[in-house]
Amino acid sequence: LTINNIMVRKDLLDRPAMVLIDPNQMQQVLINLITNAAQAMPRGGQLAIRTAIRELTDGSDGIGRRATDFFKVAEQVMVCEVQDTGVGISPDKLGKVFDPFFTTKPPGEGTGLGLSIVRSIIEAHRGLISLQSQEGQGTTVRVTLPLANKEAMLVEMLTDVSERLLAGGQAELAVATCPADALDGLIRRHVAFALTDPDLIGVHDRDLTSLPADAARRVR
Image (tube, rainbow, N blue to C red; front, side, top):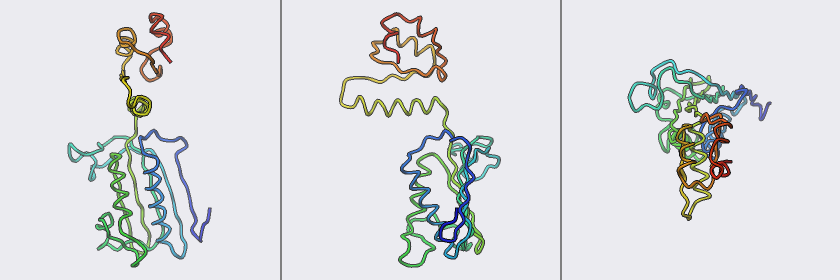
């Protein structure tokens, strides 16, 4: 795909990665990074967009050096890279690219807030963003995000559903993440409705059908 003399190459995961994100915010991130890359190639060039699952192997900033770091060495993560062959960034400006109101663009062409906002969004997702550049050769921006497990995604989904459906009412949401708690809750609590994922929590059809009739009717 070639647009305005810029050849776009995509090297994406065959299957979507399981990552908990705000789609609108992440779209804003990608639009900003791709726009910056395109503007850095006024005479054309190559723009590469890559996604991959990688294992972290070094203890760089934000990876395993402190107890508060988001990531640990040997952890698997989702990585998205946007790379261009544009004008690049000079060494004296490279350390300032994420500062608010700092821009490498000519006056009137940038506010200097783009990458600052992008970093805030990525860090709110417990992720990292880094930038490497060589003047005259191009720039690579790498976004690293934590992979989500099924349990975390189910809890996130149920929490969102509860806020939407139960707002202003007297109902209460209870989440169980192990089979024993789930089955015990269905029997002992006054449950009006139950949503189960057998693959996730290990509850099989035979377990559900062995419930008392009044509890079994509430399972969906």
